[in-house]
Length: 301
Image 1 (cartoon, rainbow, N blue to C red):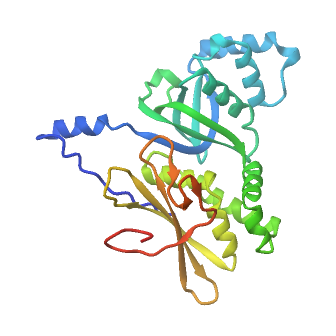
Image 2 (tube, one colour):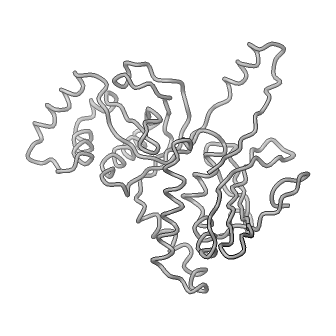
Image 3 (cartoon, rainbow, N blue to C red):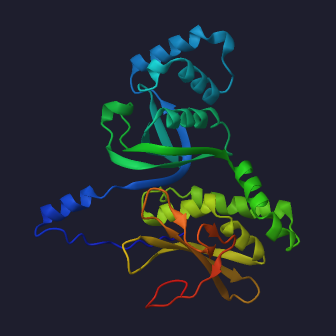
């Protein structure tokens, strides 16, 4: 999978220091897909957790994630002491702090459901620097303020896709088992890439489309006789200050070797991305559009 990202010149100062300050002022937004776990930053916090755990011995669930969540819910004094680590492709990527009590409960819910390879979470937030070595047991990683977290499972995601595409798929001799296999393949292809940590505009656009737009799975299902050769992103140059990214799929016909490309466009200017392709504003198309490249106007024109 290849992602292309353009570099923007700040143009906001007359020296390198001014440009660096202007660049640092730009808020880095995160839209990542991975798993959430709990770590203990110090031995003292771990021992306190174990004491609270022993005091609840008769009522604890068996699974590690469920047990962690159960103890945390019952002991609010530990909420700000434990360290939440978000991993992408099984590699720790971020140290996460909730922006509200509501988000904290969503994070605990994600930890409770983390057992098994089927679980994942969508993290939406803002980077606020890098953690000190003592803040999470020596782990050095960017710190993220989480504004929303969506815990889910791949089975639930595939089921939701099928529901949203029910009308379209009925007209295409829908085979549920084949559709599920294709959707899962695309999901793991995107999520298991350790390069995609949800921090660049290209990452955020691709991750948003994967979990929110059924077009990726539908486009691949409609072309199941072809091979999905590449998933890429490109910055769309516009006339305003909005940041638009095109997510492009390239299929290769197995019989002829002829490529076919489909795409959609995502606005990633703000913290919550959104699709800008559809029959009318606020009503996004279910599928992807044929990709036509125009050097002057950009993708899709």
